[in-house]
Length: 113
Length: 414
Image 1 (spheres, one colour):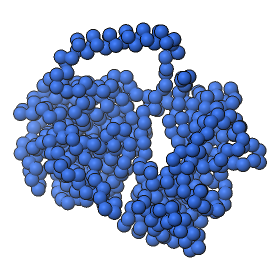
Image 2 (tube, one colour; image 1 turned 120 degrees about the vertical axis):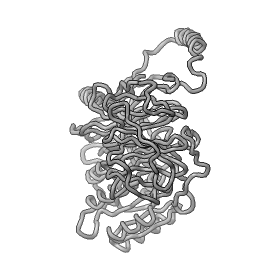
Image 3 (tube, chains in turn brown, red; image 1 turned 90 degrees about the horizontal axis):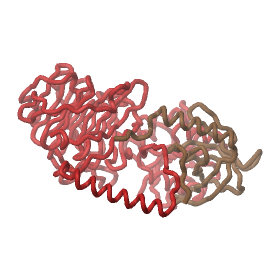
């Protein structure tokens, strides 16, 4: 099994998603956001393989970040949890930089004893 | 049956939502406006609040919701939008709303929201880790490495076992950011047991022992700035309950003889029942105006007065009569705790733990620095011994508070 090696933000970020210009849209929350992907928790049913996410990380806005829908499952409450992969290299780099900055500044990693 | 408070001005829509909720097995409480909703919230704390964005009266839905969140910060809120607008929904989510519902309402759309809302209890605090994983190894290398590690572990255990004759080895130090900024008191205690219709009763068999491990299933943290006591689950530190004190908030706290004792910001001792509101059953002026910490040794309650620089030993009577007053041998006593055999104080001036002789508390037996507080802007506050580790809370200017588990064994200091 391949393991993730990137930094991840373990928070529930509000997100607006759309399937394209003028197409279906909705809202939800991003879980486990990393520079390569995230999980999207929403009640909306995604009908395409591509999705665009808009969200804010602190003051930085990420607009219409193109992602590929890798997998989908429904939780016990009836919400859909979609596994997403970020499809743009530039966005990945920007996201990585921002996540590193947030996590290191907040000192959210445990301190080794 | 989980109770949902439905706040919708339009009677037809309110009835429609009520019927939907009841069909799904929820109890529905109804309110047409803010004042009547607040009255219901205070009388019968429901499991979730479902609120229409077209809010009647002077304040907007968002501003009314903010005031509700201040009083009931752990109450899940769902907002019904007047039309489907994803941007507006995200704006509400940013305000702390759990989710939004767009018309038309049906069991398929409302059901998941309500199920999630009644399942949620507080916020979950997780360690946010940088997932640095080792590079992939071949099976042979993994097997060799595992074998070597097993041998090494066995050798280390056999060599070091004599250091831990009677207690568990402390866990590694770790730090959690708290969702509030000025924690000043920390104690481990029982979780009140819910019975009947949301009322809480004290857990039976509450231990009065200083170690009291069996009853310490929750961490209780006093935050003077948000005027609250927060209760966290001891295992995963999930925030379970917030007790808000509109007047004279607690600054320090300790469990003793089946009750919670606090000392308030203005210098009053309070005894609380372990019920849903932590009802104050007695209140009286404490000796000294700057009591920073409380601790219970199994017989006596101890307080540390940072202003006078003394430790006080109190009899567990109705007025917490002072039996003795001992000059503090350290600098600034911020908290006091017991490990079952010795008394420990947190000296905030040097960020160290001091171990005191219980029979002669003025005498310092040992000193342990807290490296987590050295060289940064945090000020340590409360102190707790959970039978394995020392824990402290601290605050830092303009930032959120922290809860720190220290990799320091009381046994090592004996």
